[in-house]
Amino acid sequence: MKTWRRTACRLAIALMALSCTLNGQTPSGTAPASLAGTSWQLVRFQGGDGAVVTPDDGSKYTLTFGADGALAARIDCNRGRGTWKSANPGQLALGPLALTRAMCPPQSMHDRIVTHWSSIRSYVIKDKHLFLSLMADGGIYEFQPAAAAPPSIKSPVAAKGPVTFTCGSGDALRATFYPTQPAMVLLERAGVTRPAFQVKAASGSRYEGDGVLFWEARGEATLNWMGVQSTCKPS
Image (cartoon, rainbow, N blue to C red):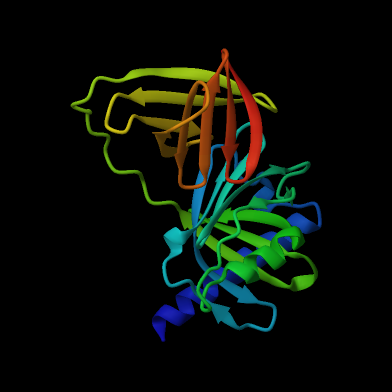
C-alpha cells in the first residue's frame, strides 16, 4: 500500500508538471531540463484510463536523445533512428521513426509504442525520471536513466582508429578496426556502439552486424544504420 501511494504521488506530481508545461508554465518558474545527450529506459506506461502496463525488461525499450537532434531508439526486438526537437520548454516533437521490421513476441509493448509515437507532445523530468505525455490525456510513459555501459576493457588486439566520418545530415560516425578473424569494426554513433564483421565484397571492405552495414570503398563509406542509409566521408 505504501509503495502504491508513493507511486501515485510521484505520478500526480508529474501530471501537474506536464499540465503546467502545456499551459506555458513550468513548476516553480524553472525550465525543464534538456533532453540533449540523455539516454533512458522504460519503466511503465499508464493510460488515460489509469491502466498500467510494464515491460518484461525495461532495457529492451530505450531512447537516446542526441545533442544534434538525432534520436536512437530500441523498441523491444527492433531498433531505429529518428529526430526530436523541443521548440519551447517542456514541448516535444518526435519525427518519423525508421525501424527494423522484426516480429516481436505477443506480450511486447512494441506495437503500443509505435502507435503512440506521433502522439507524444510534452515531457518533464522529475526525480530523475522522464515522463512523456500523449496528446488528449492519452497516457504517460515513464522512463528512468538507462543503465550505464560496463567499464571499458583494453583490447588485447591492436586496433586502427578510431577513424571519424561525417555522414548524411552531418552527424559523426567513429569507426575502430580490429584485425580479428573475421575482421571487426566497432561503429559509434550518437552514443550507441555496434560491432560489425567483415564479409566478402566485390570491392573495398564490407562489414555487417545486427542492424548495421558499413561498406568502405574509394575513399568514402556507405552506412546503413537501423534501416537508414547514408554516405559517410572521412572528417
